[in-house]
View 1 (cartoon, rainbow, N blue to C red):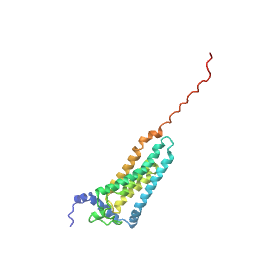
View 2: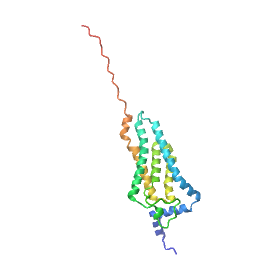
View 3: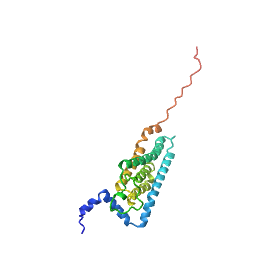
View 4: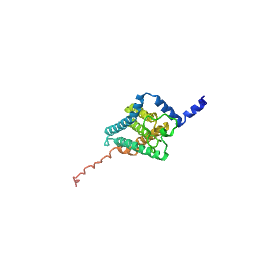
Length: 220
């Protein structure tokens, strides 16, 4: 006889361990092709997003050359987007060391086995590097090349969710990683170029030409 009440079951499902079990149970019951798609897609989609960001940066720098009015801001934003993504990754790694959260595929009892090998001990879970890079890259694409947001944002979200689906992250790991990546890139692209913007849009200093002096002497 099952003594668990609906309220206790709902309460358990709302905990990090419970949410993780819900997702991994669903993943275990999903078709084999979905397992394969998630396993290879989680890496391939990340490469796609980084390539899209690099393309967006190249396009922004090319369209707003540094010699054009406002081009300093356009070129600086492109460079900052790439640099900010690297900074976000570094912050993610630092947070992993500080928090030292064990991977759920080792820490959650009774959960379905992960679909990929569980990362080794010391490869901490919080936050998700994949989510940090995916959402950071998608945010950069959104700000620099909005027309490609329809591709970048869904791919980034699927990349983040796939980390829980594969069983190597808690849901809050990917949520925190996504917020970190998107926040750092958005802050860099939107706020940091402003000090340089007036330099690129400032009108050239007018050149004042001196009037030629009359060399003829006045009549005496």
